[in-house]
Length: 363
Image (cartoon, rainbow, N blue to C red; front, side, top):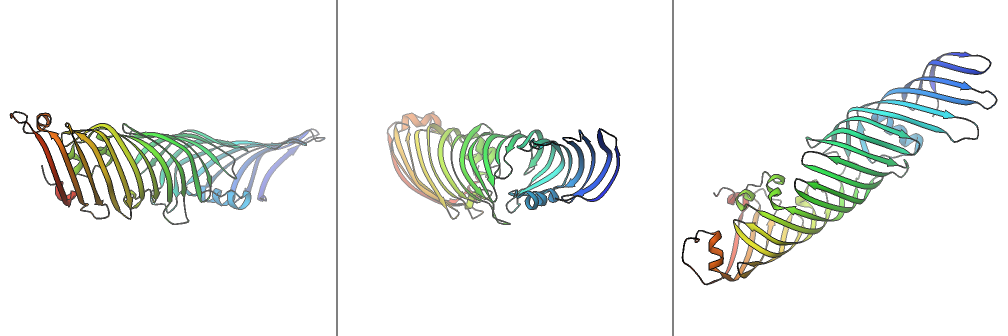
């Protein structure tokens, strides 16, 4: 880019030329600079420049002047401090700092922007590093650290943490695609890992295509789905391991395509204990299909299948449940029969239909 609207007071002598007060426009930004040129036989140029700029202007300059296309919209102001040195037959040296205060970063359609981005990052010709950056995502506060190398085809390592969620990730970003090579983290007491890609079409919802694994503490479900009152009645306890694939707009999980296979050594639901559990689940077009649930149940077995309509606010469901050879003497300790003298086997088949909204009213 060219320099425009230059104002300067310049001094010189036999050995150098310098200015402590240069004002100029470059890349759509107003700069204040100090310049020193010495050793006229093989000139060494030192430039120290400061600018307060709008992030949208920086994004435009990166795209138009350096062919660097950020897969995000950015808004807010930034303070930039820049140091440059040039000398004959030597590569250009450049480093600096960029300070953000309340910036906003929007991905894809921008439905859930990253807000209040505040902190300082260090950059040079190779990339950017940052630590202790504060931000908010969906009203939750986070602290972030990480690095970016290769401005043209960025490779990023990112860490972020909040009171409920923390993760580490490594990914590349070449607009409009983010390719995730690794993502590992914790949400409440549960852990997860994933890899895949996210495509951010211009002004359209992001398209996610990832695979991963999950170690889910069932007690966390009540925190993850606070509005799902039926979970409180189910009183889930235990741990489930899952492998999954997910495609679609991840901000609207109910509409995503999901395939998951889960297993557990043991869980408790409605106060009943199930062991050696295997679950096969598929979801498409807002309908979740439990292909099967297999488990041992108090000396016998349970087999179930069914579906849930996630698009409806009432969450309609239908389930088929087949119970065989359950021992009454084993189950009574966890039911209202614990003080009764009962024994024998239970064999039953049930078909349940209803809505979780109606069930949530029950106590």
